[in-house]
Image (tube, rainbow, N blue to C red; front, side):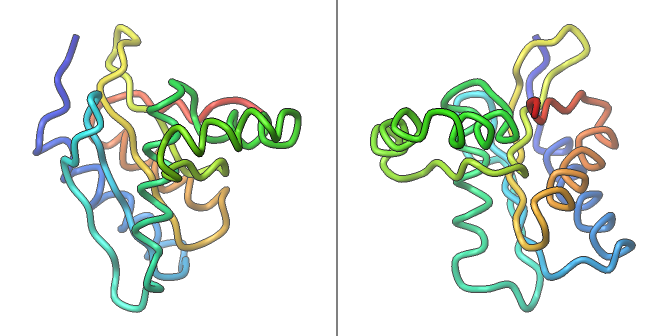
Length: 145
């Protein structure tokens, strides 16, 4: 299993934010956690709203907590709202079930971390996370519709 290094996490953040600027997205926050949920890197652009980094963390932490990309959690929230509400409670409120929480896997498919990003549309958030992960030479797992 590959360990998520600080250098890889910083590459993810920088590339994700670069992707956002090139796409003229709204101001963003990016949070990268390792496989145990510890913070590896984070950044919020000038002009983000007060709780934007908290939303990004919730997307990441929720995906990591259930081992599912937050796109899948979004689907589950629509199909099983009581389940998602219960897990949100168990996760001390740190679960945001919308796209933008992308699991990070190594080439063998092992989970090494997660990215949460928030600030624009959920699809744009997710695209930026995937760009950052790819730039670090890792594989993004956003979940399925």
